[in-house]
Length: 363
Ligand code: ADP
Image (cartoon, rainbow, N blue to C red):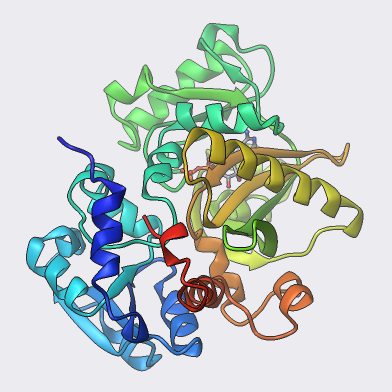
């Protein structure tokens, strides 16, 4: 397969009527604030929507145009791409877009200008590439174990693919690892071939902060726009049960994300927050040009030594940005007006048009 040439995308962008751009995305994940933010900044909006899933966009009145498809993955069909280009669309990627369109198609077959960096999406999806980027940045990440026989403390065991924490477990010895693998197989939460791909990392005991950054390539500035913590089933329900009952019922914890809470951090931790964001942006420029470009998220745990340990990154708008569809404490500090991640994206595109530097932020 031949990777799309960035110049080809910039040529398509060149042919667009810049006074009449549409901001488009797949109807799922974070599309409500992407579309709402685009409307607030004066753009036309389009949603590519799976049949039967159009209700939220109609009821919240955030989409001007609907491209209804049988399946989400049809966003990569050539007719859909043509419709998007006909509307002068810039597509905003998010987690569901990546999952349904697929990385290969986004890199090779999706001939529609996108905001952000289409090449970096592979780096966040592949655990080894993700760790490489974070390691090279000098960010503190959990230590990795090569073999389950080396387990000498509490570890978290994860499996490939975005599965919302399903099948993940905690173990403190090789024996416990084997026992829990058996349970996960029985529950059909993992398959046999997943076992050798198990990713074993140091369990970090701390509070969860998912930090939503925006890197403005136009201003060469890293902004902190919001923070959330995850609401995960069944672990967040399990901890409401008294400890002695937890032992008796013998439930295994799971980490299936079901929602998000907005949070703020102790102010004294903010220098660390900016430091790790800046570092990641610098290494992304080096390893995956043009770098972070737009929204990214560092999912972290803050220990009682007040160290922020990053266990995961998203290199596009992350689901937790739904906690500030209007504003967060941080986006208000910076902008003094309602500013969601979606609106910030639209504002960057608007500035790109005004300054005639759109080619810097489109891939
Ligand atoms: P996914 O990408 O599949 O959603 P994550 O890597 O985000 O999975 O992990 C799911 C959840 O597991 C996190 O939100 C966090 O609560 C917990 N978690 C992940 N890594 C660690 C770790 N190293 N130590 C402690 N808890 C962790």
